Length: 266
Image 1 (cartoon, rainbow, N blue to C red):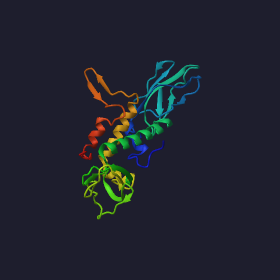
Image 2 (tube, helix red, strand yellow; image 1 turned 90 degrees about the vertical axis):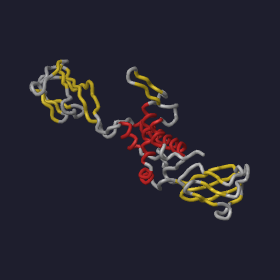
Image 3 (cartoon, helix red, strand yellow; image 1 turned 45 degrees about the vertical axis):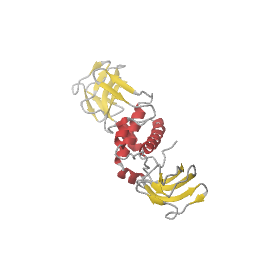
Image 4 (cartoon, rainbow, N blue to C red; image 1 turned 30 degrees about the vertical axis):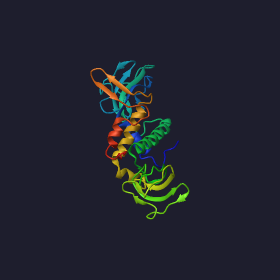
């Protein structure tokens, strides 16, 4: 499943959020650098070490900088060539690249973004990226019909069973609150409402309009990604506990972000 057009955040945004800090350090615990031949003094590392983090070993003996070697970018230059057949290893921190995820993570993260956006919209009764919505309701005899999703931009059509109703003569729209008013929505008659709703016509406009929803989707994706085994809570003695909520439900952090835009369910 690819990223939906209605997904509130992009794959790149989710990756950056899950990683927390795009410039964070990755620890390389034991890299095989090469084998001494008694003549070669320069050896290349796979990555550029963070300054001060590099430890170099020749035949398991820790080398001292600058007495035994020097480092320039990712190249180690020994003062004296390592002895024949002596292995050279290194440990160090390196700055994470722009993308530290595997290819299969993309599909997983896209699915999580789609799910988190849908959960957030259902939880708040809001539509983030503008689109056409079709809702089905049954009349209950009252004069008010409450739409499931807002903010409503426009009402496209209202049909009572098979009869197309006319705005102003058959019903009145209150887009700002997502309600339709009629003398009575007849009991058990099917009302089909097609409307355009959403905070912005594009992802960028929607993000600018509801930044709290953006944070909610990102936090849900992060929790679900890191908690793929479905753990509902964890407790560390002397530290405290954390509640992730029921598996598949929005985590409490996401709900907190959404509290300011959640519709009154009454």
